[in-house]
Each structure stands twice: as C-alpha cells, then as structure tokens.
Amino acid sequence: MSTVQTRQAPEGKPPGKRGFVFPSALTVLAVVTIAVWALAFLIPPGEYRRNTSGAPIQGTYHRVASDRGIVHRLNDLFLSPVNGLYGVQDAKTGQVGPTMAGDLYGSAGVFLFVLAIGAFITVVFATGALDLGIGRLAHRLRERGALLIAGVMLVFALLGTVEGFAEETLGFYGLIVPLMLALGYDRMVATGTIILGAGIGVLCSTVNPFATGVASSAADISLGDGIVLRGLMWVVLTTVTIAYVIRYARRVSRDPGRSLSGFLPGDREQSATGAAEPPPLTTLHKVILVLVTLTFAFMIFSVVPWASALSGDADATPYGFELGWSFPQLAALFLVAGVLVGIVARLGEQKLSATIVQGAADFISPALVIVLARGVTVIMNNSQITDTVLHSIEGLVSGTSSSVFAFFVFLVNLPLAFLIPSTSGHATLAMPILAPLADFAGVPRALVVTAWQSASGWMNLWVPTTAVTIGGVALAKVGYDKYLRFVWPLLAILFVLIGGFVAVGAVWT
Image 1 (cartoon, rainbow, N blue to C red):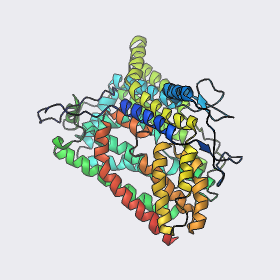
Image 2 (tube, helix red, strand yellow; image 1 turned 90 degrees about the vertical axis):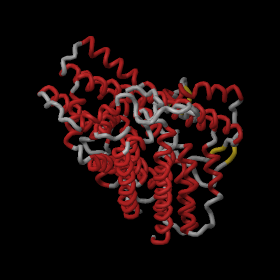
Image 3 (cartoon, rainbow, N blue to C red; image 1 turned 180 degrees about the vertical axis):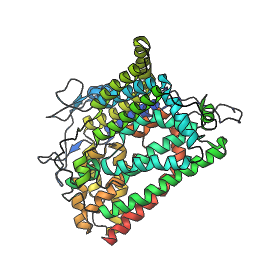
Image 4 (tube, one colour; image 1 turned 45 degrees about the vertical axis):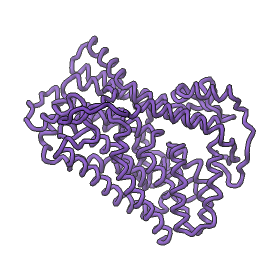
C-alpha cells in the first residue's frame, strides 16, 4: 500500500488555488526530532538513583555532569534514525548506540513487521480473493455499516483494555481501509475505527499488564485496585468514541463532499462493490480467505498474555499454551503466511517473489515513520533529560486537595506522554515518583494509576511521537493534519470526561 499522500479535493469540488500543504509524516517527525534535540541543550541533565528493579527512588534526583559535547550531540542527531531502528542500550551507561552491547532499544522488530505485513497483504490482494470477499461482505452489510464500525471498535477496545492492543493494529489497515471504502465511507472512517477503537481501550485499561500492570506494580498496589472506576470509564468513553466515529461515517456517506480526508483516485469506485452483488466466491477464494482469517486470529492469540489477562495478576506465571510472541516472530509469521497464500493461489515463483518485494516496498514509508519516532526517544535518553522533566513535576503536585491533585496528575502526565509514548516506559519512570505523592494528598494510589494511564492514553490518540498514530495515518494514506482536524472535537470531549472521572473518583474513594 503506497503511503504517498495525494492531496485531492473531494469529488464535486473544483481544485482551488494551491495554498499551504501540511508536511508529510516523515517531515513532521524530522521537525520533532530537531526540536527535542535543541531542547536538550536547555534542559539540564539529571538522574534519580534506581532500586534493584530499575525504578527511580523519590528524593534522589541530582544533577549530573554531562559528557555529551557538541560532537556527541550532533552524532546523536545524525544517528537518531539508525538508533531508532537498531540502537542498542548499554547496560552500564544507559546510552543507546548502534555499536553498544546490551538490549535492543530500536524498533527493528516493528520495522520488519510493517514490511512483512505489506508483503502479506499485497500477496493476498494479488489472488483476488480479498477484493471479492470484501465486496461480498460490503454488499451484505450495505445497510448496516454502523454495526460493522461498532463491532470492530468494540473488539479493538476490549483487546486494548485487557492486553494493550495497540501496535498490533498496524496489521489491520490493509483489510479495514478497503472495506470501509466499499461501504461508501472514506479513509478517515477506517483510520478512526482502528486508532480510536484500540486507543480508547488502552486509555481505559483495566487489567492491561503493559500499562495498568506495570504502573500498579511500580505504585506497590494490586492490579485490581481501582478496577471499578476504570471499568466504568471504559464503558462510558468507549460508547462515546464509537458514537463519534459512526456519526462522522454517516455524514460522509450522506454527503461525500464533507469528507475531511478527501478521496484518492479509485476510492469512490470501490463503493460500487457495496451496491451491485459481486460474483460468488470460488473454493480457492474461500480457502485463501480462511488462511487470512486464521493468520490474523493466530496473531492475536500469540501476543495476548492470557494468564495475566484472565487472572488480573501482572506477575502471573504464563500458561503452558502462551506463546508470548512479539514483533520479530510476527514479522516471520506474515512472511511465511504470504508465501503460503501465494503457493495455495498458484501464483508461481516469479510472480510471488515480485509481489512480496513490491508489497514490502509499498510499506517502507510507514516503517520509516516508526523508526523516526523511536529515534526521538533515543535523543532524550542519551541527553539524560527525562529524569529532569520528571523532577520538575515532583514539586508541583504536593500540598493540593484530593480532587485537584488527581486532576493535576492527569495534566502533568500529558507532556510526559508526548516525550515517552511507550506506556510501560512512561509508567516505569513516572509512577514511582507520582504514587508516593498521593499519600501526602490523601488520594489512593490506584487513582494516580488511573489518572496516569488516562493521560498516556489520551496523548497517544494523536501525538506524532507514537508509532500507532503516525504509522496508522501513513498506512491509511490520510494526512496527519486532516486526522487532527477529525479527532480534536473528540479529544476535547474525552478530556472533560476524564477530568470528571478522576476528580469525582478522588472524592468517591
């Protein structure tokens, strides 16, 4: 799927005078990278002492003398895309670089996963089975598009609240985008269905071990503490979000000229598949569609931490059947599945090889976007400014009332979520500092966890430093500026609702 964003006016409107065109996702990330790099000169480096688990110890922050001269800093900027791909974090110094020895810090696994998804989807479309299957499904649901949107978003929200389903959604754009186009919607509907569906689930995480689990452990409380409030938030906020996307979808269906994303060449033609009944599926088509379904179902099964999700214990011993797969294994899964589909469809060695290469090439843009986003966090890490930002918050949340404190925890975590888009990384760094402050304010630590994850989840619905959002709009071929225009009213609604929940929760608990 090409990620070149063609700027085309909605059909029926003559193109006007060319004005300002919002930069591409790659350019946005490049600007963010330079901005964070420049800020690192102004923010003094510092660090907290860590305990044996690596969490910062309250009251131990101290300034450090940085050895990052201008040459080192320029090297960090120059190598940020490389480090974002395969930078390694040194276990002793914590610095990230391509020649270090330690754990992989870069996003090589996600990068290869996106390319593998591109190869797989392209092979599937080459068989013609998915096109025909989408056409028949669209025809059957031509009067029930809202039900389809609600169903997909509900499933994604459930997976998000239970196991942090987020980056995995990158694999679904190749299926959801053409389906929504066939139903007469635009690419923004598909984008909102995927990003907001999974994102609202993560925002309202209940037993998600990667967000609520990590944060609860860092705050020294049980994963189940505060689950009633978070469950209520999930019901209300998920309902509001689904209704918001369906409302927009109906507006575009009635009047395509009101589409915020516009239509690329061929988009409007796909809606015809929802009107005229396509020819029936052959046996070969059905076999291929079964393989596609099983591949995605197995992907979900392989990444869910079933013991943690079902027991509510973030440290539960994994069941014997759990695979615990991550992006390297998923990349291999989709490559193998793509080859298998090509063999079953009898594409032939030459066509299959060419199709796999073309599919990976079409997905190189969103893959590079993900790499650049990760490179931003590497610059912050090497400049040692993350702990300084956290320390600046430490003196702001002390001595306030319970309701104000809870809402303030939400507010101060918003910029941190921008700087640290990883929920687990954000929790590990912030919660050991913020949770003890709740004791002084007379607020349950569980409420701090809820306020923190709400801030992280709210920001990750739109910030350009998260691969889920910036990579998603690139995969859907929707301009980032247009996505912001689409989502900002919902963000305002969610902001008010979250503020109300955490403030009332402080009094209620």
